[in-house]
Image 1 (cartoon, rainbow, N blue to C red):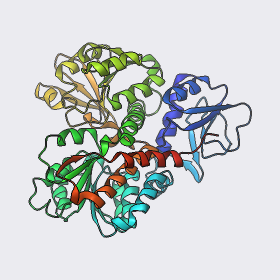
Image 2 (image 1 turned 90 degrees about the vertical axis):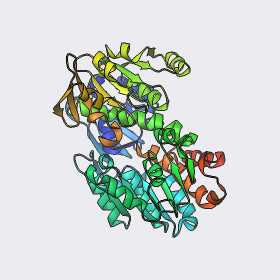
Image 3 (image 1 turned 60 degrees about the vertical axis):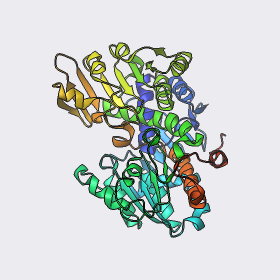
Amino acid sequence: MHDSWVQRVLRRFAAATNLLIPGEHFTVPAEALTLQRTLRAMGAHVATYEGDPPAAPQYLIQLTAGGSGHVVVTAPLDGDPTVEGPSGPLVPPQEHDDAPARLAWARRHMPVTLAAVERLAPQLRGRRIGLSLVLEPKTAVLALELARAGAEVSVYGHPGETRPTVAEALRDGGVAVFADTNPVLAPGLQRDFLAQGLEFLVDDGAHLIRLAHQVPGALDGMVAAAEETTSGLTSLRGFDLRIPVIASNDARSKTLFDNAYGTGQSCLMTILDLLAPNGAWPLHERHVVVAGYGDVGKGFAKMTAAFGARVSIAEPDPVRRLQARMDGRAVGSLVELASTADLLVSATGVRHTVDLPVLRALKDGAAVAVAGGVDQEISLEDAEAHGATWAPIAHRLDALQLPNGPVVHVLDKGECINVTAGEGNPIEIMDLSFGVQAAALGHLVEHAQSLTPGLHPLPRHLDDDVAAATLTDWRPLP
């Protein structure tokens, strides 16, 4: 089975299920050697079969119709793969955006979050908790479970990170929603969200933690907060915090998994879906350049190389650059590597990583995207100020014509690709991350009065408890 077939199969699996590939068990036909190699390179556990498929595999990929199991991917050599779950066909949300069904599917795969919130229910009852998160099924499950535990829950969603059907499902579940896809309304919604007298704030990007320090009265009743992103914590280090904030992202159970496995997989799949929505973008023929070799960069590079791409790394830190070299990646300066890149992905979380000289160094038709990032990680405003012009190509894919330079294909106008253009990180990964957030919330409810203002780590024993719970609930290998 050739590389393009493998890509179509795994992209369809990921889009329809939003489930993880690394660490999971797949049963595949013995003759599908390229598929086996790709899955193992991504970190999956692979068993094979000949003849009729086994009765109850974890994830079964087969070449003909029929079979049973948790998830069945039927993948003809010619034609589109189909995905079947225990209750019927599974399709990507853009094909059938049934929010209640997607929430139920996510909830089915989030045992760690459900158990953590249930344990904390006596502490959470009556507490006013605000969540600033991407409004998609997995985060909706967290909000709804906190509300079921007796907390007074409200959520804020950034315009580009809000799924209207999910927002409506949250309202139906009794959660106050401050979100709209119109960016003009965002400042007012943020202030209204902070004006509720929140006791605890769980943030994603630290935007609202910082804003709460500027809005009169927002901190009057706020006891503490938690922040779950790398870029968010970067902005808080050195910030004059007047409340204690748990650095959830620094917990090993979050950063070692969410950033590498989750963001690595989801960003790659989203990028491929945008570049070739009706076929395969042959990575085995491409040169992919990754800017940054932190956890996100490492994960994205691993997933991309698993599909056969030639991967190079641009990383200023000499220790990380040495890691990249020992992982088998070519290393060099971003401008030098950009000149031969078919795809350039920034994974630094630093503004202006892909600056104007880098954009000018790219060849005609090269694609550029951001994997988990910040505003202007690609210097698009600078490019426009120097005369660059836009032309649409396809859904969330635009051509940027640089004066006397190349035409660059920019994915989703440089936004955080897996969040704004995809379904976010796989469910199992977010279950782990929300387990960390729940642990942080429980720790703050119990101990915030004794914590000084500023950043605090999640206690090591709570971090370990989340990992242990995940191992307990992780589906065993056959």
